[in-house]
Image (tube, rainbow, N blue to C red; front, side, top):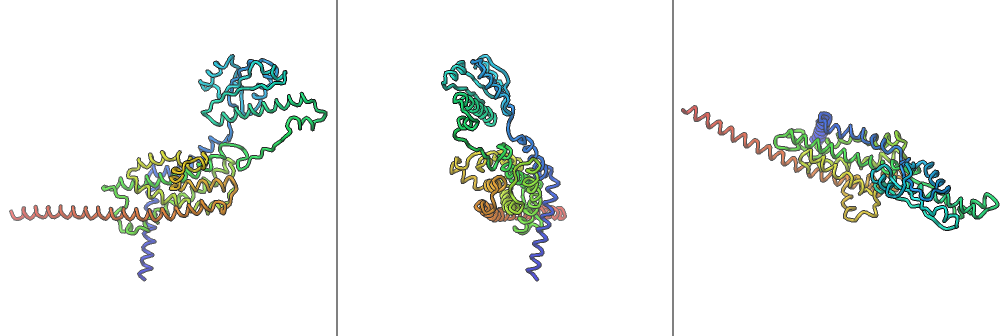
Length: 421
């Protein structure tokens, strides 16, 4: 009966801790913002910004020193493309560079004076492209449009010179070696489908760690001696404390995780190839690893302001370390080993492969096993850290009792002296 009584008492204490933690989450405005408001609004904001997928109508300045029919044809074809808008014609390159430096235009097309003459003499000519490299999407639109138009015009000139008898001969002359452009994994070629899956998974980790850190900071600020574990009979066991708190965070982020990974991509029509069964199997160890990791961070970082500074500072580096926005093979080994400490590294890689590339759970088994290893490792470390917090709380409680006892002795001595007089 004693074993069953102990189990029942542990479950009761864990439920009590869960209830207290849930109350604290919804009473603390800062924690509520990071646990609920940010996961709900932030993905919508990011997805709305990147919903166009590609940039269109990028302003370009044209410097036409040829003033020929072919040069005007080149300019008209560029202006007719969906990605480029001819802003104006400049007199020379200096005027065009001035427009680019003032950010009125993002690039320059320079057509030399011998453009038409060289083509008439069956000589090769060039069109110079000057791009603003500060925005890679604008550079891509300007450069690829110029390449496509020059190839098309070159093919038309080649067909006219060869004078083929049939349409098929003209096609072979224009493009003897043809190719099929088949985009895979990201058929729209858009930036949203490329980066948003990684950002959504990273938001789960960052907001979770921020919320747990703020909650722990609030508990310390309310306690006079800045102790994380309150002196309460329900907070006497490590497993019940860790389990009760983790259950609270898991229940909240089970809903937030389903919203970010299943609802947001469908609202904005992003690619979603993962089944809900595989997604549920993947998100279970990822959320557990993030929860225990956040609980460890909350014990290490003392003040709630420091948690916000730390997590916001590492957000962008963590996105790069996932290997999505920057190739994993190009990341130095030292930083790759640092990235292994964060659940987002393997969570993002597994989710992107399953959601965007159509991989199954067996294809990401390495990342899946590492996530479970992180969850178990951080759970044991979290228990050790919370055990240390319990010892500190008891030590401070004993010190307070001793000080109270000494004060009572002094008061008793003073009263006895007064009574003796």
